[in-house]
Amino acid sequence: MRRVNSAPHRSANLQVGPTSSRIAVFGTATPTTQRKLTDALGRVIELRARLHSDAELAARWLAVKRWQSERLGHTYTDLLASDRYRESCEFFLEELYGARDFEQRDEEAQRVVPKLARMLPARAIETLLLAVELDELSEELDAGLARLVRTPVSAQRYAEAYVRVGSKEQREHQIGLVHDIGRALDRLARIPMLAPMLGMMKGPAEAWGYGHLHRFLYRGFHAFAAMRGAGEFLETIRRRELAINARLFAEDPDPFRPVD
Image (cartoon, rainbow, N blue to C red; front, side, top):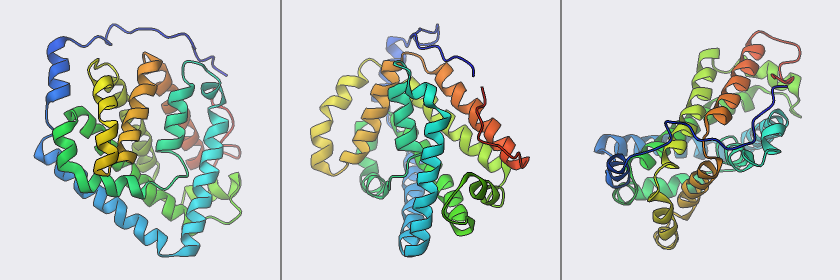
């Protein structure tokens, strides 16, 4: 297995100048971005509502989610054991890949998109848009898997259903969105003024009804800021997920074995 470097390092590209920081912090998301976020949230909320309306399908969907979470925990034991990468890995596995239901977070976001756009930097809104786009694609694929997979879910049964839902290219796009969210959070973590800004927003966020959404951004920001450079972390996840995806579509008999 390839050894993951646990020592923090600084890339020459990590420095953000004062002008670009001001633009990132005070720039407002465009109306197009706000509309895309609102529309995408609406589609995800509708998809989850359909899932919850079918108790049997919802139970199978949750079983798929839990199996995926367990698999990811095994795939990334080294990152979870790393002092440098543990917090960011836990954030990814719980907030992006987790078996949790994010319906409340999405409903909060849809309700307050215009207010969020006035209070948060444009980059933060764009990061949320990426997260919701990932949600939409993942939920569609997972719902399809839930309809086909035999239970209880096992590696073999999961692999059989996986290749019947979506295409190799759709899965690669899904992995690409995860990578893009990580890069976006890494860029946010380089903005010095954003840490106190997010901290001051905690009280108003709770009062105005988007506490779950604030915690998502706050947790992601601090996890990536503490990592001090996300390149190796993100590339490790992308490389392993692409390799496992390729094995699944090649009908490899042991697709989840260690990649490196």
